[in-house]
Image (cartoon, rainbow over all chains, first blue to last red; front, side, top):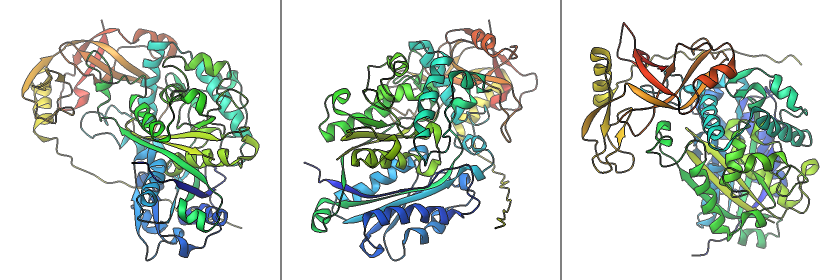
Length: 392
Length: 150
């Protein structure tokens, strides 16, 4: 069955920072919603339902904060659904909105959310609690340590130095310097990154994403509605998802099904999105990518999972500038998750940024001539993955 | 204008049940200084830490299999940053494929000088052989054992 086309008609995002003491949590949600609604040109009566993007409650410190957020999305008397797949939440929310439209259940769906990670004091303390309380939480596992272990295995398997990792930071911070919405938007050098302190070897402070606050929103509509109302849109032509099992120790050693060095399930999600979009050669057919990579080393296996280079070859190609703005296939021209991470909406911003790119509305970090791009999101114990292809 | 803040602390005590499988595992660890996995009868894989069912076949695991005490490091990290409510740094931990196991188990690496990160990382590189050590006083918890390089 050929899937019906679903259009993106509005995008909103905050200027992300550590704290937003001028705005309560619902104020931040509304800020992004107003932007997306303004761009769409619609009023709230046109919205048939809302998908609410909210990852672990403890990050904002409000249990089931979607209860507070419902007013900020104009949700009263309408269908309302909260989505949480950890770091992948934002792209899962866009996917849920997409399926509501693609199925014919709704003509227009709003998806929105916000996070205030800067208010939680210590996100790793919150994220340690996503591990099971029996075997792994007491270790104490966390998202930085989990992905430091991926770095260790990637390094062992393919070769990667700490200076290589620093070059990913230099690239993305430069990209972020062109993006007024990015949180960490000052350029840095390899020496700066190398001089920053170790957090979880081999990951240093500057190899890590920040703890950001801000909101995100998108309005999706059916092709028929867009045509009938003569709206401007870009199109979601592929959507794919894939999950991985829980136990990290299953992704190593002789019995492994997928190596923790790589991002096997992410590759499956991206492959499914490509198949739906009719993409057979991503290196030739993808103009720009926004791939969820919260630590410098994770950009390598994400680029490889997206088929933008062969597995195990991303390091030299990042170093040569192939994935920088001005290169062959810019990856994370917004600065990406490494420079801005308001967790509940981070993966939504990946899709929103690709929409802006193929629309030609990305501003200072616009990739010239971009017509087709791909976005991804990762969540949980490197476990829940989503991908979307967006085209002009 | 003056912008105000309000501080809240979440401090909730949960008493988690370990269930039959993890309870048996931790009793053996506590009382006999032994580490066991569970065999998935269909695939033959020995799952460590032990689980009641296989995530591949969804069938119940059928047999206890003693593993270790030797093993091979599969992944590690060394934490140098302090996080709220987590152990004081530095500490090293990671995953070890114990002899006879098909999946890695998480544990701390002890007996290392962690003051020089690069040197410490070299000592626990992927592939390094380790032996399981047991605490004198064991309480039936993951902290009852750790790994030391051979």
